Amino acid sequence: MLEIKSFTENDYQVMSDIENSVFTDDPYSAESNRQDDTNRPSHIKHQRLVAWLEGKAVAYGHYTQDIGQYHPQRFRLWVVVRPEYQRQGIGSKLWASLLEALQPHDPIGFISNTREDKNGLAFLKANGFTEKMRTWENRIAVPEFDALPYAHLAAELELQGIQILNLEQVLSFENAKQKYYQLKQDTSLDVPRAYPATERGYDDFLKWNLESPKVLFKGTFLAVQNGELIGLSQLFKTDGEHLNIGLTGVRREARGKHIALALKVACLEWAKTNGYPEIRTWNDSNNLPILALNTKLGFQQCPAWIECIKELSGGNP
Ligand SMILES: CC(C)(COP(=O)(O)OP(=O)(O)OC[C@H]1O[C@@H](n2cnc3c(N)ncnc32)[C@H](O)[C@@H]1OP(=O)(O)O)[C@@H](O)C(=O)NCCC(=O)NCCS
Image: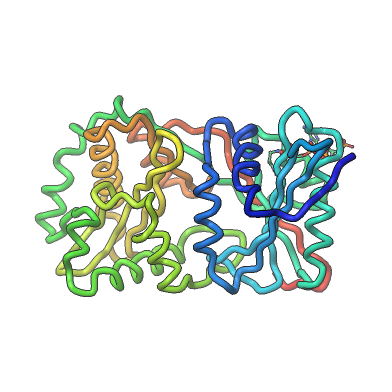
C-alpha cells in the first residue's frame, strides 16, 4: 500500500537517492539538501513529503516559494518518482497530498518546472499547468576550451579602465560585500522569470554567495571600473565533478563592451587550469545574445528546463 509521510531528519539521503535515480547526470547530495533547509529564509513556506510503497521510498515531493519572485500565496511544487515506479499514479497521489497540505496557506497560483527529457511536461499539463518559458542548459567540455582567440579582451578592457578580478581580490576592497550584493541584486532583476522579480535580503545573499562551501573565490570573476563593480560571472562547485555558472550579469550602462565574454572566458580558463572537466550554465531560450555567446565559446545545448504555471481563479498573476 502507498503511504505518503511527512519528511523526517532521516529522509535527506532517501530524498537524494530518489532525485539522483532520475537525474543521473546531476547528483545532489543529502548534505546539500540539508544546507538548503538551513539557509532558507524564515518567510518562505516549505514542506517536504515522501511516498513509501511496501517500505520502499519511491517518490519525493515538496512545496516551497521562490525568493526571487516572491508572492506570499504563490507556491512552487515539485515531485519526482523513481523511474521504475513511474506511470502508476504515484506522482499524482503525492501531488494531491502537497495540494492538500497547502490549503491552509490559501494559494492563488503555482509554479513548477521539469526537464524536457523527464516526462514532466505531460504530467504538468495533465494537472492544468501551461508552459511559461524555457531555459536551455548548456555544457562545455572544459579541456577542449581554447582561450587564445580571446587573449586580447582583457587588454582592450584595461584601456577603458576596466579590470577583470577574481572574487578573492575584490573582497579586499572597502565595502566589497555590500557592493557585490548590490551588483548581484541589480543585474539579477533583468533575468527573465515567470513573475516580477523581488529583492533578496542581504543575509540570504551572504549565505549563498559568500558563506556556502560551493563558492569558488578564485573561480568567480568580477569586472571593476573606478573601484566600482560593473559585472560578474559566478562559478560554483557542485556535488558532481562539473562546475555550475551562477549569475553572469553586467550593469545596463556597461553592456555591449564584451565584459560578459571576458568574465566567462576568465571562468573557463580558471576551470581548465584547475582540472575541472565540465561547466554548465542556464539561459533563457529567448536570450539570443547570451546563447550566441555560449555557442561561440563552445557550449553545447542540452535538454531545456520548462517553467510552467497555473493560476487559480481569483489569483493575481
Ligand atoms: C513527472 C513525474 C513526477 C510523473 O510521475 P508518475 O507517477 O509517473 O505520474 P502519474 O502516473 O501520476 O501520471 C499522471 C498523468 O501524467 C501524465 N504523464 C505522466 N507521465 C507521462 C509520460 N511518461 N508520458 C505521457 N504522459 C505522462 C499522464 O497524463 C498521466 O496520466 P495517465 O497515466 O492516466 O495517462 C515523473 O515522470 C518524474 O519523476 N519526472 C521527473 C521529475 C519531474 O519532471 N517532475 C516534474 C513535475 S514537478
